[in-house]
Length: 292
Length: 315
Image (cartoon, rainbow over all chains, first blue to last red; front, side):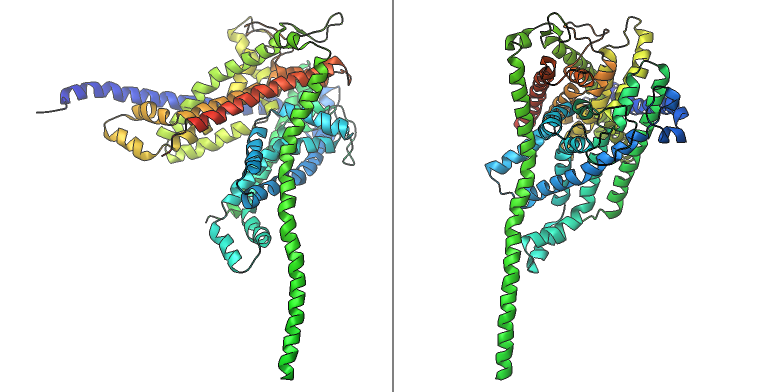
């Protein structure tokens, strides 16, 4: 007795295979949609903005006349802001990660800290702007300075850096730690001389990616009131300044057609900036990451 | 004997020295965890800072505007000289319109990409496509906003002549493109964590790849997929620059997708770029709106957490 009717199976098989093939094509097209939108986005921005990229664009300050508009104030301002964000967010992020991975015992308080970091990662950036406006700009009276913006951005990317550093620290194998303890090293010696050095590539990669997010973020800067028209370069941490995304936002909002191209040129500069940072992160990951 | 006594003395001295060194060492060992704990509590302080500033300034706002007018009011006219109205429903309507369009764009495309990457694609294809999705996720939102305003809106206007320059449709679609990589990569993670033995079992019974994907892998990965969608929705609700640039600044309480809108985030940006002075009702209103926004996203994040915890399948 045959349990499977061969003819019946063959008859249905064809349509099932066709369905499979059709859906494979549909799924592939859907994936292409994302790639295509990225390609169009890059093409549009480059073709629109490349004409405005010139030496003058990098050396001029903002201007009412599109042809004279330049990005130097924003570029230098973004670099200054980075100089605040990088140390602050790395110290806070790596410190928290070491505590959570190496010292924190499993109790309610530490569970609360963990849950809190996960929740903080989901808070919209514009709300961080409100925090910065109230605490740094007004309560601590830093004004709309580099320091106030840098602190706000540091807090914004803090959860990302903590999670990346935690993963990097967790990836250091137990054997290394045990060998260090076996040689008579104390806990802090083990952490500072064994765990951290082998986790640093991972931490740096995560840190640079988080930093590049902070550089492209606009909303908190708008909320804390970073000005757009700045005709001088900042000279200390309490100076007023403007940043790349802020400048682009201002150009994009203007009604004149020509400013759209200036905005596109600004976006090219911003994207190149991010591209360089991401490449550094990839190089660090590939070159220094050890596999255990 | 004398020499041995000398060495003994020396060693005692050394021991004292060592002991002294140990004390300093002990002090370091003891203080490090405390310092690190203080650093780790900064993230908690940040949360408290956010919650308290939002609550205090919102209370200040509610002393000027009645609470019920705020949550049930259907008109948002803060800049009116005669009688400013602060009913948040139009702003929520704007936010929900954009979010709904974004979900309609991102969920089908995101899930299809996830299925393709986890079930069909070869390793080589995956190695090419995944980094591109990461790039898409790393594009700053201001760039997306510019793209929506200068490319997507004019493109849509060719098909929908009634479409205004500022509308809900264009930023909605672009926010969808922005959250697509998030859904794709989180859902793909959920699907790849379904063990191969289950797939092999279904394939051995004669199922096609499509049947495996739809009837076996999708149900098994459902909690992860749902969580990824909810997280993406939360991101869409909080998205600011795309809607500020391409959505306009006309709060309206209706279902019109083709006309200018205003979302909660765009209102905060509008006030911040304007010249509403410190201490005015308008100034406090951004905190009330920010608080509402914060509650929305918090709810979504908790929901995502609860889904992935409650329905997680362990293999």
